[in-house]
Amino acid sequence: MLKVDIRKRLAHFELDVAFETGNDIIVLAGASGAGKTSILQAVAGLSHPDSGTIALNGRTFFDSGGSSGRPLPARSRNIGYLFQDYALFPHMTVERNIYYGVSKTHLAAARPVVGQLLGVLGIGHLLGKYPHQISGGEKQRVALARALAAEPELLLLDEPLSALDEETREECQDELLRLHDLWQIPFLIVTHSKSEAEKLGDRVLRLKKGLIVEESRGTMEETPAE
Amino acid sequence: MDLQPLLLSAKVAAISTVIVFVLGVFLAHLFAKRQFFGKSVLESLFLLPLVLPPTVVGFGLLIVFGKKGWIGSWLLETFDIQIVFTWTAAVIASVVVSFPLMYQSAAAAFENLDGKLEDAARTMGASEWRVFRTVTFPLAWPGLLAGLVLSFARGLGEFGATLMLAGYIPGKTDTMPMAIYFAVESGQMEKASFWVVIITALGFSIILWLNWWSRRNLRRFAADRR
Image 1 (spheres, rainbow over the protein chains, first blue to last red):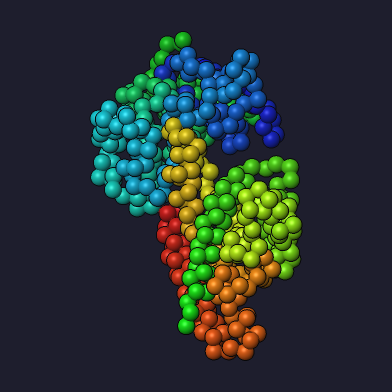
Image 2 (cartoon, each protein chain N blue to C red):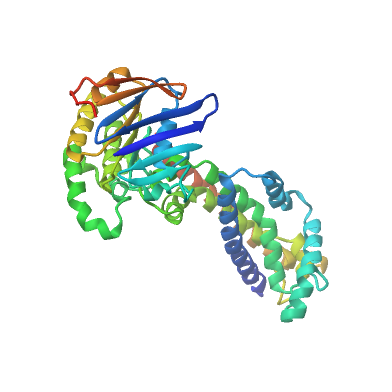
């Protein structure tokens, strides 16, 4: 269960959002500059809200009214983050990129997980290559595998498909849905594409100047209201 | 021909480069992504030896490390260590004049780094030290190496400040530039020419190699980025 209830002063407006989810795909939609990425960053712990609370499966990430006061550092949150331009490490092979988040003690346990990811995403043949040697769609899949390899409890995706051509984008949308079925963790996806939001989202939260102005159910499946 | 000046210059430049590298990388990394009051004043101070006449730097060093200097007198009284007229003085002079080169190269290297890569590492559970070791440092390495090589070359050629702090004591503080100056002073043109050729050849090969290397790396990095 992910609970987000945060406020943060941004350059031109105040971000003020609250939502929670079980294992759904939540899509944050809206024009660029509406505060979508700021929400992801706050959940990931890469920047912090001014006030509010963020909690995942009972673990408090951030609580401005809490006793400890200090936000949980990004490295301890156990979440996966897919960056807009993937942020693959250019100096590491695909294999080292994917295993970056897997600690040595978990290596044995992680092998089958990664093996399954490689199979589902069809990137097993890329392990020895460097990021600059593979295509955009392949980068996207590698980044996805990397984000999931450490078995996060939540996956954040920032415009995950915006850099891809039409055809690859549709393939990757299907892959995302398949991975979500397999993984059973909440996905929080930022997109500005309306069709993508409707296709991927169990719920779509439309943001405008830092506020959720509309919430709609995605068209993919009928989920009973929580 | 007595090769003492070559060996001494190499020793002084090598030790100075190690100190400058550690110090420069540490401070540049510390300052790279932080804004604080007085930052530009401090940075200007770091770069000052680049624009000051060597005699002024040497004068400043005498005030600090001379027998009656702030640190010099304390060292002399407490540990019976004298800095002036020793090869340690040559190292100190070389550190001070080559530090700006290292700092500038390192600061540029860290500032040009894509912060998302470091963030990606953090979300995958990496500690700040691991982020630095596995992402920041390797990606900044081309810039750091350029700074390292320039600092070494600068250390080899250091004359003015060294003369003021270390003096010219044959067998003790006679680095190559010193040997040249005092050979000319005493009319030993042949000896001077010998060292001029050596030091010019060294400097030329360092710059040549650096140019070749950085061009090769630029190409590789350009390929990585796209």
